[in-house]
Length: 90
Image 1: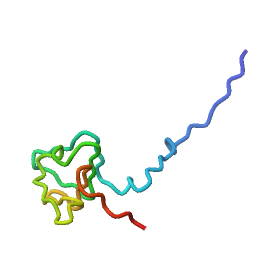
Image 2: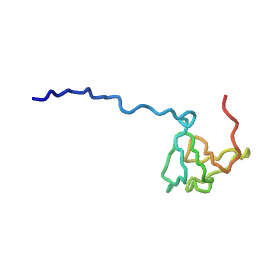
Image 3: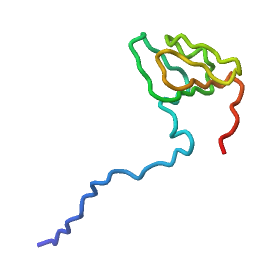
């Protein structure tokens, strides 16, 4: 008879990945983000290396600083690779 050893199951799930400051974003995308207009996003959105033109359906309004856009469908800001780089947070 072979002895069987029971292993304890882990209920905690996989180890959390440290996303650094990217964890502050509601959406991060590489190629595009789109909506048909029935959308509500709470937080900032970012896209790179694609440009802001790949964020479609949101009616983006570029801020005078050229750093981000806003939208009535998003409570945060939209950052894109073709915008002026934002100042670093301290």
